Length: 65
Image 1 (spheres, rainbow, N blue to C red):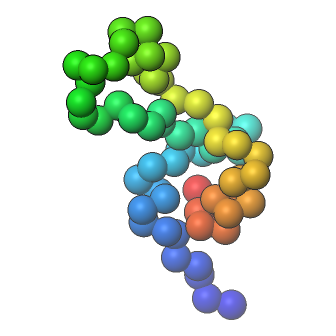
Image 2: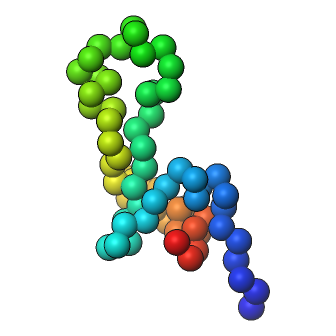
């Protein structure tokens, strides 16, 4: 069976942890930041674990990562 190709868009957006979970960045942090409260911007920092509902799709898109 041939090797599978990784989804290049997903590879740039998600990272796999050592335990096999997927991490993602938070949304709404790119522009128009002056109108958003400091607290909201602060909570958008860092990365979070991907929702269990999306993990199956990600495993398929990133078979070797």
